Length: 243
Ligand code: SF4
Image (cartoon, helix red, strand yellow):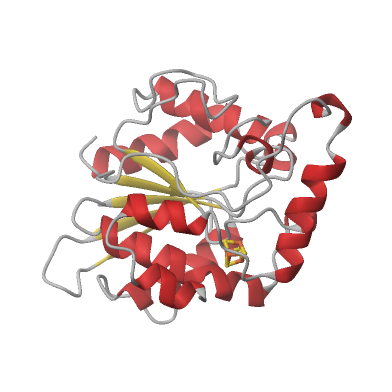
């Protein structure tokens, strides 16, 4: 079954997350995630890689959604949990902990006891891509999973932080397809610190979307994104979400 049919039929996030883990709709990404899991990085040679799609992580009634790009080959693709087991996850979870939105400052393994408070992670592409670059076709094939996630989270979600331009551009078509909020035309451009407010299309609450540079090492090692900048954006979005 294709993601478009399977995701649409999921009655809740638990089912959606479970079914997503069996998805094989993108041949290039399936081959890559499994090859990375076989070859492994030397430092993780004794570990069994997850090597499957990575579902969202966090409570189903989260008020704040953090949208990334795609799982990292030796991070989420290894540990089986989004933003877990690499420097990007460390920086993100450290910021959430500092803001009282996570119970611990580290994210190292799927069984490390991490709990997010009112926050959920997701991504527009759920399998690790070569060079962290999914193709437009892979992004579009994966979209129904995100669309259904947005529909199911509609009652609670009030704000989003989008990490990087890829996630930003991928999110608006998913929001439009979910049909819960109005998407401005032309679509707003990505920028760090950009904030866009979307009115409800269904009579419910609106949605505030915040842009933030991605927590990649490329940005954090060079100081393009500092821990304080990250905390400022997430803190503002969390406050709007009532957290
Ligand atoms: Fe399925 Fe998405 Fe992975 Fe493609 S990227 S195989 S649609 S989970």
